[in-house]
Image (cartoon, rainbow, N blue to C red; front, side):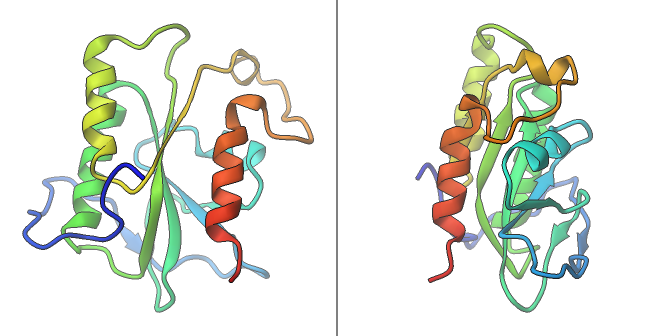
Length: 168
């Protein structure tokens, strides 16, 4: 666990917010919703390689029954700033009917992340319950289809989400 598990009193509303919409009805319903906080965050890829989640369509899937949500962003400065806004929106109680599970940060480039971006990841991860970091996966860049099993880079994420969303 990296940050708060529930919204906090006194958190101001962010300047930029994501829309809030009721989720599309699904036959069995997803175990969780992937919420890309900006375009190109990696939701489509994660939906393919980590089974169980469904794309929330860049809107908070709020409803009467708390919806498990995982924020998704690239590790770029713009992606991480979008995370700050989304986390602040959640923490300020602007969004109801959401159980925020955590944040997935998907590498935006191969190699070691610059220090300023590592620091920004550390900062934003303190505002969400959990952080998962997915390193650069060259096969995704090349458009190779997903395999039957999640890539090793996604194994901890898949395992944790399965555990967190398992019916009691």
